[in-house]
Image (cartoon, rainbow, N blue to C red; front, top):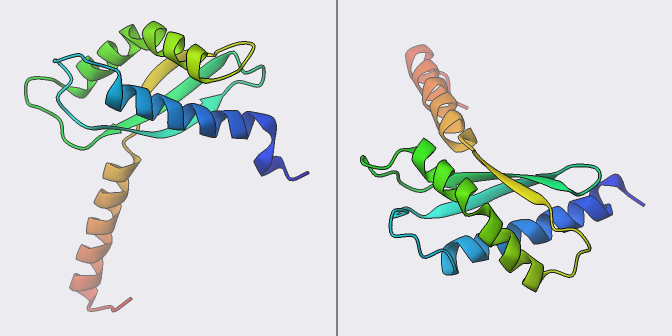
Length: 124
C-alpha cells in the first residue's frame, strides 16, 4: 500500500474537515471575527497529538494572530469534545493550533520574482 494513504493520513484528513466545520459552525466566540481556514493537520505516530495549522482571511487590527491562536488553543478541549461525538476513534488527539503563513510567504516570493522579471525584461 502506498505510504500517502496510510491510516494516519486518512485520519488527519478527516480531522481537518471536522475541525474546520466545528470552527465555522460551532464556535460562537464573538472575539473571533475573522474567517479561519484549517490548512493542514499533522498527527503524531501514535495519533495522540495533532498539530492544526490555520490561516486567516483577514486579521482585525484589535485582534492579532497570537490572540486568535490563544483563543483557539483555549477552545481545543471543546473542539475535542465535539470531535468525539463526530468521529469514531478510540483516542481523540490533543489539539494544538499553529499559524500557517505559507500563503503570505508565497505571495511575497511571487512579488519578488515579478520585480526581478520586470527589471531584466524576462518573460516567463
